Length: 256
Ligand SMILES: [Fe+2]
Ligand SMILES: [Fe+2]
Image 1 (cartoon, protein in one colour):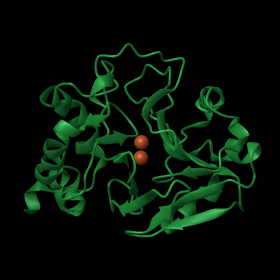
Image 2: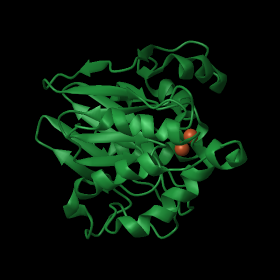
Image 3: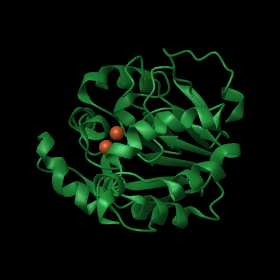
């Protein structure tokens, strides 16, 4: 992943994050230039193609055409939705129009809310704490719940082959001066603070999640907003969550 830090990004094309011939991970790319831009990722493995956090409806055509540079978009087999926010999940209705059989993979708390986008029924797969999904290559995706970061039913997805942790809003960063891969963690902290201090529930939530990840072999953290955090900064990223004071810690600081 480090090799991408200095690479000239072609924002018109997907960027390969990992590819061993049997298993591929791509950053789909987006031309949105606001600080709240969203990352969509694609995992391809055998006959499975799973979009991680496909995004809002306004960018559906762009995401669809980028996916189309890699494969027929109607052959996407599933959506992994880390929670139901519109920036993550609203385009599920458009993806279901393309392929009504595609699986929507998320937690029960998220599935309760997703029908409000206008599809009462869809093929729903329920993610549970520490559950896994086997892939045709022999690899697997492991799901790790991230309660109250920021949604009660949020979760992260760990790809055991590429060792990429798709973290959703956790480690999200808001910044107009953006790079695909973090090259200076200290400079990146304020951009993460902008998101975490307002959105994340509390230190108990962030510290509890970080504790679950200790010992996990992480090549890169791929959040839904902002830059990818490469392996060399993963220990500091965990420490960031461990020490973070956010949300209710700040709002009700006088109660401590
Ligand atoms: Fe969110
Ligand atoms: Fe988000």
